[in-house]
Length: 236
Figure 1 (tube, rainbow, N blue to C red):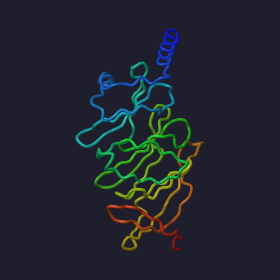
Figure 2 (cartoon, one colour):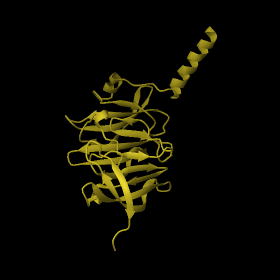
Figure 3 (cartoon, rainbow, N blue to C red):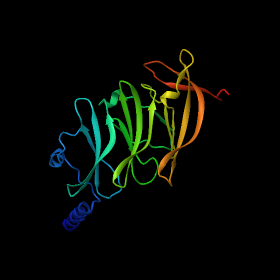
Figure 4 (cartoon, rainbow, N blue to C red):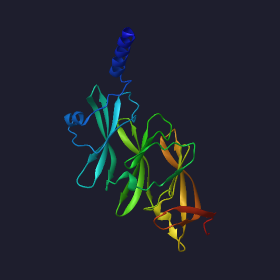
């Protein structure tokens, strides 16, 4: 028994050494890299480097935050990559609207602060599905690490303060209802345009594939729900 335990300890030490077991970093570790009081530290796979990788929130002023991806090996900083995103408000998870619908085959991943993390385009690297809520609007963007930098794969302005409304996630596809297409035509009745994007594995980007026009009822607060009524053709 003692001999088996000894071999197990040696095996775990070897796995730590080659990066098969995560060595979680601490606030003190980050301070050595010049990063003070991060808003959060999330361990995940973003670059497929086989190193320990972390997403951290950096406070910028009283009410804004930024995001960075860190690559760590043996608790030493290998790289630090900024994400082209800044949240104009740091909001609580329980007070945030979830503006996504999906089918049973798509795993959004766990909601963290103001984003989801998962490999939506199935290329082996997790994307970061971000939302931004501000006094003038509501938007989202999908970011992914590629060859030393973080790229924005898709961005959209959404109608503010509505949940389960304007983003539909499918198999390597995303349907968006941009806020500028939403037009009120009745008390709670609106018409709008949905744009379908699909993942292009050759160019590594989401490309516009199709559009559809439809009418929907948007219930006022507190429900804030969108219910499609019918599709229609554009007037010629």
